[in-house]
Length: 231
Image (cartoon, rainbow, N blue to C red):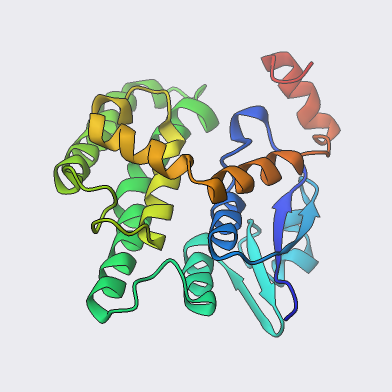
């Protein structure tokens, strides 16, 4: 069996290291015990024609396995779970609920969290960012409160079995790790920490971090130096 190939960046700013979405795919592959290759892209390479043929929106990750090419990390994780017979329960109801939680992680919990990242990182200097931050944080807290109540004292979202739904939910909760949002809820904090303590996650994170061997484009390097992001 040939190894699948994923794409990843060879450099991102320090605040994004450990967060780029190829980590989710790496984690899934580690969970199912599948070796993989990585095609590393320099910043800007994701917008060039060869990569756009794989990913029309010029993003990472992508996944290639034989004649199959996929984009979107959630779709890739679902395919890996199907392809390698893990991360999804075998009974119809359990499988459906795991997929339900995959969608909940990406469609319900992640959007307000990414709004927070936009307001505090990507558009932090814009005049509209600071005024809208309280509303963004209120939406996050509402969703996390609802998630906390549903999780209750369960080990994982649907009981005692870790699924692809948990993988994506933990990945999303990590985005605001240390911001005090998840930490407000003891059960969510413990849930997130159980996920990131899994050996498969630790291997995936180490591999992603080890791949950041490139350098920023010159114009970006100058800006980052002014921001104190690079030495």
